[in-house]
Length: 356
Image 1 (cartoon, rainbow, N blue to C red):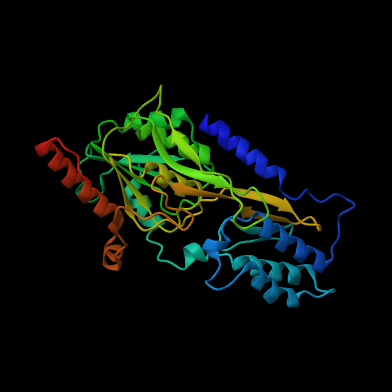
Image 2: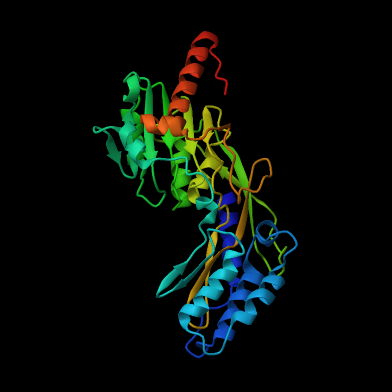
């Protein structure tokens, strides 16, 4: 029922989006296209209060960039002014799309420490790792870890194919492991339904994971009531009800950020690494009079405690990559996860109680 309500809300939001340009509406006028872009964002964008610099309004942004529009400016010049205006929102889900370029804002990730090394990740996977859809997985053997102790799964993109059969196969083949590390650092997102699909394998009961709302009108604060986001447990398939550490960094965005939202708070899951990059809004697309498209965030998502996740989700344990470890060929965050899991497993053997 909650899924149906969310779908109906999203369909309603589509009805208030500006219509796609018809052949009669088509124009290359720089002024008309700039104004159309500003107006679409003004009516439909979901995060003005959260994203604009303090003391700045969207009208202020218009007044700042509009003087740069000239009647005979080139397409490249117009594109540059428009993307500059959109960058004021500091939103990785806001993109201007033209046949010759894809406007984007990446400082949400690039202005922060990366806390991930692809080369080191490959070292931890080793040469005998398995591949199940988008999951790369193995039992950790690196730096003297015992073969049957801790499993390691690397999932680099929620755009990568991942079916129930893939997840079941990977978890079944890691069943000798007492704990699991899931590494989604630098995962920029993809399909939110894949986030749901993967999360269910780590749940022992249904749970409320958050709430969402969408724009309902042209006002900046015109939103629907909050709708619960609930996940049901698996009825068929492999459940992993053993300790898990989920590794995150600033490169975790959109659907990957959604996965952290749904995993964090599970009794046996601990999030470790850096704050995620965010991207909690569902992207929508609208067309400009010249045929270009603008993509923007049109919904807001909150965790179960009421925190907006657009700017990222904090880990349970903040851990950064250490340069000395890097020079020695160690991934600080993976090593900390291994130590943490071993400590908790030893404590569990003594007390029969799992403590984060």
